[in-house]
Amino acid sequence: MQLLKHREPALLVSGQSVSNFGDGVATVALTLLVLETTHYSVTKLSWFAAARMIPLVAFLLVGGAIVDRFSRRLLLLISDGGRAVLTAILVVFIATGTLRYWELIVFAVLFGCFDAFFFPAISALTPEIVPEDLLPAMNAVRPLANNLMGGILGPAIGGVIAAFSTSLAMAIDGATFLVSFGALALMKPTPRPARTESNSMIDDIKEGLHYVRRTRWLWTTLVAVAVVNAFLLTPMFVLLPYYLLHDLHYAKDYVGFLIAAGGAAGVVGALVAANLPSPKRRIRTAWTYWIIATLAALIVGVATNFWELILVPIVASPGIVMGNVIWESMMQSEVPRELLGRASSVDWFVSLGISPIGLVVAGEIANYIGIRTYFVLLSLICVLPGFYILTSKRINAVDAGRINRVAVAEP
Image 1: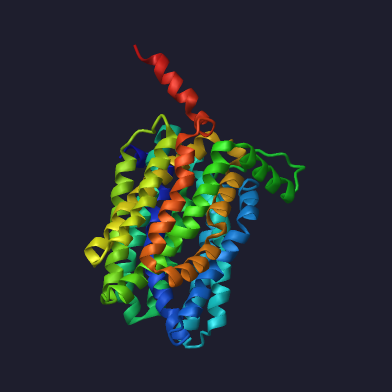
Image 2: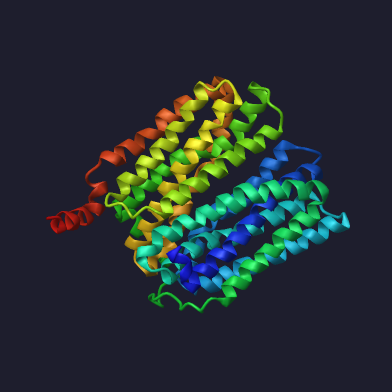
């Protein structure tokens, strides 16, 4: 691949691929660890997941302002180093048999804080080290590695290791952070972004919010995606496994097969996206993929066995990945470099901001009307904003110049 011939992107991809594998191992290990520590309390497992997500959402805007003040590579080094240290401390607690639930909550909160500037930092670093014509390929390779290493290999191997020793599994996760840290350390230093030194942190955050608010294609998509994430995609991770076990009466291992199917389909989507040129109509193309992913939830309404239900992640995952590749490449091309960290943090903040609420609401509604009815109803509701964006000339005006340039060049 042409992308990997460039030293800096190759180092970043290699380090993150290993780290993604560790994330997959940790996903299984932490789930088992929390359940064992709390005597298999599903409620406390939910709180543990929320403990990591809430600080991530709460501090994303601050994280974006920090990302636009300092070297993005340096911040990634701090994030990987900090998470390696946290994981090492957790391993000591597990190995000595002194781990308590409240310590797991503290661990999750601190991890969420590091995540809050990791995500905008890696988005902002990418265009600094990757030529613009290779941005779509880079933004496809990242989810490819995430799905392959973090969605398939990591959980599969992590499940076997964690069944033997959760401390060993978490130690492996900590080691992968060190590998990623080493890859970042080998990269050339990146400068601090150009900015107005007199601006306060609050001014920086306001500037990022103001930029997103006045950029129509950006804020309309973020609001629409927030609804889809909160009430459809995030609840899938809870409601589909429950439906498979409770309503269709399959064994527990089928839940793993369902998750692996989504990871494998995401790999295919990333491979396809990596080999496609950037579309002329970026907004419409991205939303076409996302609409297909949203409508995949309709399958739940007619699924009566595992082989029908598995079609949901197989259809949805590639659509999500391919739309995300276009979106991230578009942000990196259209948003000014000095604002990219803050714009990315607003992206994550809005996209995920109401997901914890959506998860609770989805559970209550699904409990009342049934899971099949819930997914059919919410799929049809959540797809409406996408169709509006797809047909709006004002929102799609950002691509007008690209289409006109091509039209002039044609004989």
